[in-house]
Length: 178
Image (tube, rainbow, N blue to C red; front, side):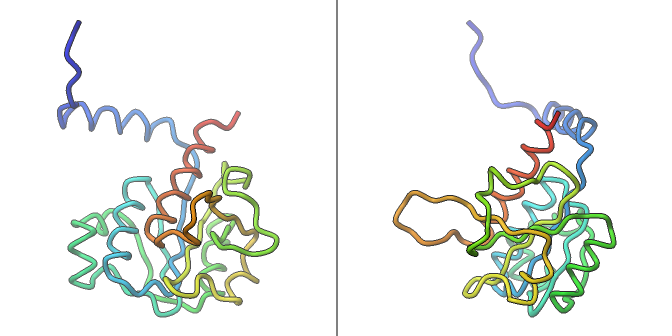
């Protein structure tokens, strides 16, 4: 029996290239009023890993050029196109102008569970600030809202973790769609 081992960098690049070639879905991300630079850096690193084509910053979001954000992003912010902060409704409209359906990740009365949300098409996910989530203006402008089901005793995820979970689910749905 052959011992299991980690892939070599060349093998990882080949594997990732195969996934890219088999991915048609376009992903965008709106980051509204996320001010923690380590959260922003982590979100950009995750966006780069999942092939997000554009990140729109909204509200008072910290840009990825912040030195503390750079520590977490590890240079991956250069792999994702991003826009300086816009008002929330303008960021949503910019994503819609690119042909993306805008789905906020937030706990609202009409939110669908993440795994039941229609994320297989061209979609722009939205995550909101650490303390207050998505603004009412953004929620009003979005095409839909989803939430991440939780069974533990904690009321919410860290915003960077929530972005990663939502982006992973969007990619999963895109890859498994008929």
